[in-house]
Length: 153
Image (cartoon, rainbow, N blue to C red; front, top):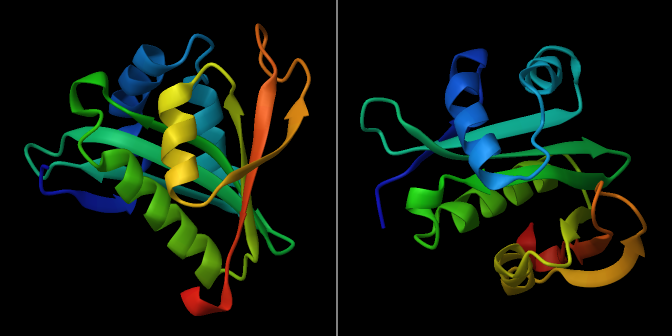
């Protein structure tokens, strides 16, 4: 596993984030969406994982925290760095930040066909709680949730 630095995403990271976004999703977010999240969304927490080598961003994740819930909006790792712990590091960092901001539960949507992501989320205690029909243009989404336990405080 590479030595990772997890830090808040900045607008200077967006070029690298967009490269990962386009290599990870069939319907990627736009640059404007990331810019708006960073600039205007006071409930948002966006992180990047970097190797420390030339400031290279190899993954990113984001969530919104409000009303005692955290909603993970995105998580992706560059294809060349998958299955090396980056996704786990980003997920646990997001959950720690959400807990500190008062979240009692975290949820997300994931493609049923995305077995790698589902395995990651299940490893960290997420359970399938429902389905969002037509959430993606070409597929339904599974809703996965996880409560924070008092032991995590």
